[in-house]
Image (tube, rainbow, N blue to C red; front, side):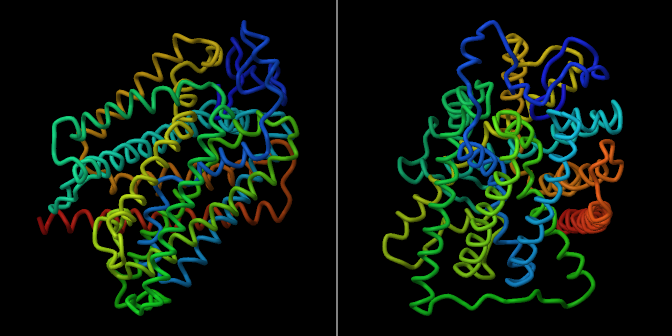
Length: 458
């Protein structure tokens, strides 16, 4: 079984190609054939919202800090560049998959590089997605219950409204969120079933952008904001290395490749996938640029690594506390609705690693339930006992995310198992690999030095 869809078969992986076909649905035919037959393909808008929700996650909150580090002009140009490279890498995957009648990313890697190629992809997705979901849950706990991990206590929404109590402590709030919100949402076996929650998630991201832009414009008219720096401040070689630490954040912000096949498989018209990807990337890039620009304009050099933490202070406008709460609540709900989309691919790939020759997980309710419950428990426990994993998040962004998003697609197009690549494709693939390896190697080096120096200072 591969990534994203991995249509099922009871024979070993090597014989999957003969057993599959391009129109195999994400949910294979089960006993309830009538229910399956009623599904006539995902809609264009539903696919756009699902893919956009996959893209816009916690990364949106780290982008303003990246703009602060890179400067306004290079930062925005980098957002656009990564979006263009993402579109190119997804196009590589889709063209190869359609030509070879492949229905999953993992199957494509396996067909191109053998069993170890499939395993490498699935391990990367598991590492990336479980790290992302733990970060999501930590953010939810911090916003709703408060946090003191930085040495300064930031009151959570519930703590601010009702005062500190046992019922609104982080473990209780996250347990309630897991049981009442996450458990029902991750029980769906089709991505298209989440199209309405995905649309709401995108709408909430837009609410955040609109409020941030509105406050920034009011402050700009009043003359109470500083003009942001247009270019980075370079005062030595160390500052140059530090600029590269923004790259993993930008890469992670666009990683959606693990759900592209799942969305493609649910489309009745396969030619729609390209405009769906382009529409989603255009929408998300607009949200990213607007968020980064207005948040950096509003907070300037005080912009924090997680800009949501900036909304714990006085915005110096009327009803500041009300706007702070609206921003934080809308973002937490947004994260809750993104969670099942990322979880979907995590569950499929973990199942593919553990049971590579078994029938599709959606046809085995017992396996589906055990893996779902186990993953939710691991993510919950990790979020409770790990106070902050932002450093780990940077490392996964510089390793697993860049493999999924750029290196693996480029390697596939260079191997060209289906004869679809052009000279332009191969030049672009080599460029992507070089850029990814060099920039993320420097980012890892810089991150490691920063952690080492912080420990020495401590």
